[in-house]
Image 1 (tube, rainbow, N blue to C red):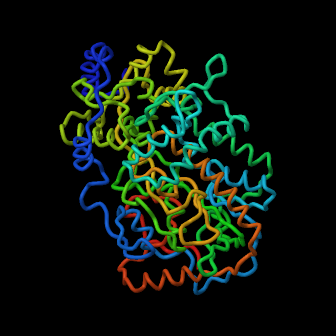
Image 2: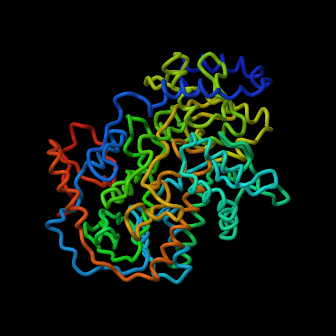
Image 3: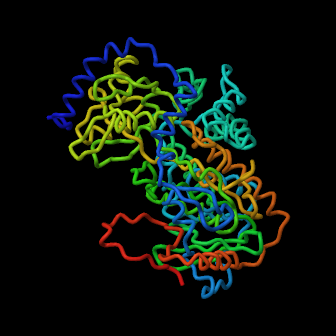
Length: 545
C-alpha cells in the first residue's frame, strides 16, 4: 500500500507519463534578469507585504527585518542589570567561544593551537548545531578547471552583487586550505577510486566544486571537529548558553552563562570573545517550517546587537527551495540540493518541468511558490499542505541503479521509514526556512564592527553571502571565519589585559526600551522555541534576576 493518497497517486501517474520525455530534454534555460526580478518581487517571502517592520532601537534603528526577528531585538535582557551581582569570575580565559557547532569548534581548535587558554560554551551539546544538519557539501576551488577568482564571481553573483567583497575574497581564497585542513583531521570526503575528490555542481555555480561526504557532509565535518575538540581536551561547558555579554565601555570583556540544568549563572572573564551561536530558523519567520536545529533561535544576533554591533541584510532570509512537504512528520526537513545536482527534476502537478533545477535558491524557492500558489499547479497533501514533486527516480535511471543509495543513503533511509522508496517514487517538497542571509557586521577576521575584542563567526555574521547564499558556502564560511576569528583573537589577546566586567550596555539598552513604552515586555535571547498551543503559553518572564 502506497504512503501517498489516491489524489497524489493520480498526479504521480501523470509525472511518470512525462518522465522519459523529460529525461531527453535539454536543461531549461536560466531565467533572464527582468523575469528573475519580477518572480522574486511577486513570490519570494522577503518581498511579501506586512511581514517586516523597522527596528525601533539599537545601532541599526530604522532598518527593516521580519517581525519575528524584530521581536528579539525589541526585548529586555534575561538579566536585570540593576539587581544582578557579577562577583568574581568562575572562568578566566584568553578566548571564550560561544557555540559548539562548526564555527565554534574551528575557532576553539586554532586558538588552543596557539597556546591560549580557551573555554567553549554551548547551549546544548557540542555538535548540536546546524552544521550537523547540513547535507549537500562544501565548496572550494581546488581543481585545475577552477580558481578562487571564479568562485568569487559565483558568490558575488549569487548574492545579487550586494556581498561585502573583502569577506567574499577571504571566503574563496581560504577555501582550498579548509578542505586540506579537514582531510588532515581525518574527514572522509567522497573520492574516486584513484583518490581524487568527487565534485558536483550546486545551484548558481559555474564550475563543479562541491565536495561532499554522501548526504551527511555537515555531520561528517561536525564529527571530525567534535572528536578533535575532545582529543585536544579543550575545556567546555554544555547546556550553558551565553545569556549576556559583559562589557567595559566599547569593549567586550566576557559573558554570563546560564546552566539550563542547574539554573546557575557562571561568570566568564575573557580577553576576547567569539560568538558562533548559529542561526534563527526556530523563530519560524512568516510561519514557515524550518530545516534548522532545535537551538537555532538567533542568540548571537541579540547578544552582539545589544552590545552595539549593527546588523546587515537582516531583511532577507534564505528559504531553501526543497524542504520536505510530505509526510508531515518531517515537514521542513532539508532535502539537499545535491538531489537536484544529481539530476532529479522539479515537476508540477501536471507532470511538467517549469524551471531550471539549479537556479539560485531564491529563484527556485520563488518559482515553487509561484507554481503552487500563483499558477495553482501544486500537489496538495491530505492535510492541505502544498508542494511540488522532486522526481528522484530520474537519478537512478540516468546515473545508474544504486546511485541514490550510494550518494544519498541518509535520505533514502529517512523516506523508507515512512514507506516511500525514492528510487521508485518522487518526493514532495516545498520551501523551508533554512538560513539567515544577514547577521551582524564583521570584517575579514570576524571582528565585530564597533565593539572591541568581540568576534562573530558562522551564521550570526552578515555580509558574506549578500542577499542570497549559494549551496556549499555555509559549511565553508563557518570554517573560514571560525579559523580566522580564532587566529586573530589570539593575536589580540596577547597584547591586552582583562577589562572590567559590567552590564552597562544592558542598562543603556533597557533605558532605551523603557522610553518606547512597549505594551508587552519580551525577553531575549529566546534560548529554546516554544511549541505549546497558544492557550497554554503565558507571558514570558525573565529566568534570571
